Length: 225
Image 1 (cartoon, rainbow, N blue to C red):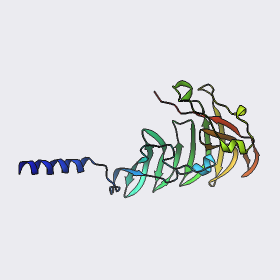
Image 2: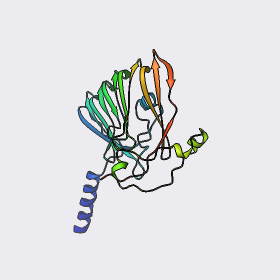
Image 3: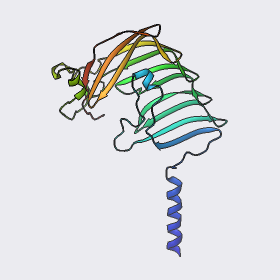
Image 4: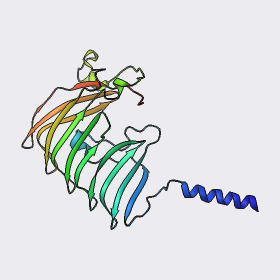
């Protein structure tokens, strides 16, 4: 009997510490949800030029944790999404809609900071691409870079940028209006394996007036220290 009671106690403790598979209902307070998410990160298509999923960089444990402040059963206040210690996006919500400053990938090679008003991109958007932010200072694993997309575009491998200073930055400043690119410069970064295709699009009064030729940056695997 003692052994049976001991096993039941261990089982109850295990359940108490296990991550819930379903979100816990919260009326007021901090809500934490950990899920296996393949959803699209909000505003990545509008800001980056292509959609990105919450788990796009997660290989071994594609779980994403959401922290949000709940007031009267609605998301009001700080909202953070992160995975494996890396913040994916952070912003403020009002009645379940993003409202205020919104940032995606703040610690990544590519980061963006924009203004959202009641769910709609409105105002300045700053973007920074630092291709060798981490790999320049880390022990890299050598791989043979390959990009089928680059070859199809006629960009030869001797034109690919494979290394550089960790402080190298490509920065743009653009403005959104009614959720659309309105004026200024916007970075587009498209991935193809280890290759990052970078172009800058310039807008005036919602119209695309120019686009740079794509540059190919190769970001090899690295170990953060």
